[in-house]
Structure formats: structure tokens, C-alpha cells
Image (cartoon, rainbow, N blue to C red):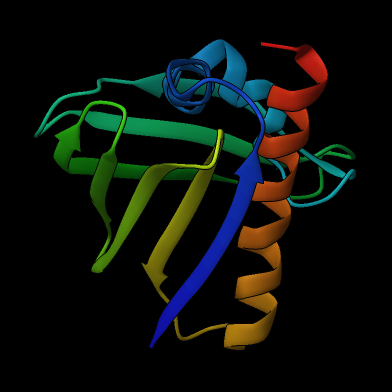
Length: 136
């Protein structure tokens, strides 16, 4: 099953792209709820390059590394990657002066698809708020 989430961001395409692929920015927006945060991030933005984000509960009770390998990079347009046995794509589409960011990925088997969709949407909403509030 595929999960699909999207957000509309009122910022220049280059700004949206940079905030999505820059580790210092990723640390600021990459969390599904206020009680989690990303403590470190790395990005090797090229086909075959590896990315990783360390996500942890703020109370220290849990954490995990979200790691994958880029399979397609079309600057300012498309990022595709594999993580474990799953795949994902992130598309950046300019429409009427705003940028539509659309993420589609394979669901995992441990959690119900709706809770997964809600978590991914929350992260993307945080990203949109971060870019908009920073006036980037």
C-alpha cells in the first residue's frame, strides 16, 4: 500500500528545495510531534548517496535512525529513495506562485496506514511551517 501526503508552501522553489535537503534545516523541522525531535542529520544528495536522520523522543525514552539511499535526484523537481525494502518519492511542483510538495511512500506493516499517513503529514506540515515562518 502507498501513502500520499502533500503541503503547499508559499516560498521560492530553490528555498523549499534547500530547506528539504540541508541537514541544519532538517534538524529544525523533521518531527511528527512536539515530543520528538531530530538530533542529527546527514545528506549525500546524489544517486547512490546516503541520508540519515536520528529521531528521538525528547524524554530519551526512544529513538531510531531513519536512513536510506537516493535513487533519483532531479534538482528542484524530484527526489526518490529506498529505505529498507520500501521506496519513497518527493516531488516539488510550482503551481500558481506556490510550491506543492508531494511525498508518496510504501507503508510499513507494523502500524496502521492511517497513523502512518498522519505522521508523515505532520512532518510535512512542520516543514511547510518552518519554511514559511523563517521567511526563507
